Image (tube, helix red, strand yellow):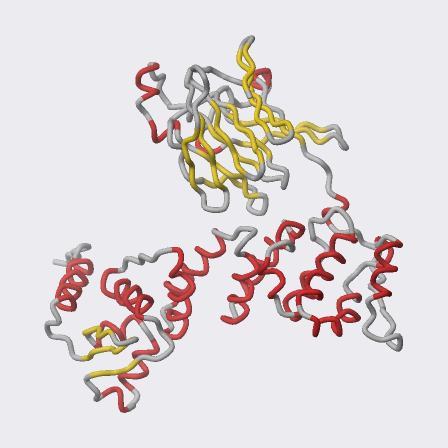
Amino acid sequence: MNVTNDEHPKTVLHGLNGLREQAELTDVVLEVEGRSFPCHRAVLASCSPYFRGMFTSGYAEARQERISIQGVSEVAMATILGYAYTGCLQMEPDQVQAVMSAARLLQVDFVCCKAAEYMKNHLDVSNCADVLMYADMMGDQALMESCRTYIASRFNQVSLQSSFLHLPLALLQPLLNRDDLMTNSEDDVVHAALRWIEFEKERLQNLPVLCSSFRHSFISREILTELESKRPSTDIKLVYSDSTAQRLGQTRTEMQIFVRRDWLEIASPYSAPCYDPLSRKLYKMDLPDRLSMTNVSMVATPDNELYLAGHIKSDRKLSFQEAMNDPQLQKAFYQYNHLLNAWESRCEMISPRKKCSLVCLKGYIYAVGGDARNTVELYNRSCDKWTSIAPLPHNMDSPCAVCLDDSIYVLSGKDCYC
């Protein structure tokens, strides 16, 4: 008879973890930042080539009962040991870099890869430069390229962040050399570099080096004059790039998205039409998770980010009461990832709603009314969080909200509110 118990590995791990928690049958104690971690050498060696080499190569640690581990934080060690004994990786967002650093040192590849994957999937305008510097320090080329691509796709916004000013020259110049910088003009690239230079006086000597990344053919006369005036010495000649290729952002076509019920007559109800006015072609953009365009709400921010909310159409027809009591489906909120060409889930709305109106004002997104509701929510993009704000005067189904100056105007039937 040949029988396999698929649950046996889980049972063994569960038992070993129980022994670890009770400090029973452990044969080594790891000392990390003043905290003691009783462990089993066999478990450590089976998960980490670092520990395997330590315990099997005749080093002094192979005979020591207590071993001090340097260069690893207490939280990171607890996380990695938790993974080693359970196969489950749990860490808070603010612990990811510390865990990745520890995993790289201890050669726990799975943890290292998942930490890098998390950072890649959670890049934003405010953190991408910091993550790039961290990835460079770790020597993670894949994560570095993800950061560079993200920065290029949002170069103007990223260049205004304080973290951008802390990039070393070795990381900044390759960014300025890229063809895929999403900038409106070459002057934007020069302005970003000048802000970097002005952050520290000593950086002025790097101006000639950075000028080699600027594409002379596309720089305005005013900016060229400004650059010449900033030369660190009259003996130094500024030499520019002779590339005649425009950056991606200077040649991109404008895509407009229209959400109309008429689209249902010629395409799937789970897609939205996109129109390119330059080519005069109509394209189809698939909506996420079977979202029906008849209920969807979409907003484009000034920095060209797309957000979408709406009722997810079920495989069966729901009654009104069933739909209203299905918050998981109706609270859905998504952001479009231009790099991956995919919709990504964001924090769910507080109230389930469909046919609401989404508007963006001063960087915040507002979900207004919908489903005969009077509630209004505010979405903070920087922290991925919804907050309830002052309600509408009365319930509104399918309202139309627009922004003008610093105000939001809501129209429903013959009524208009500000």
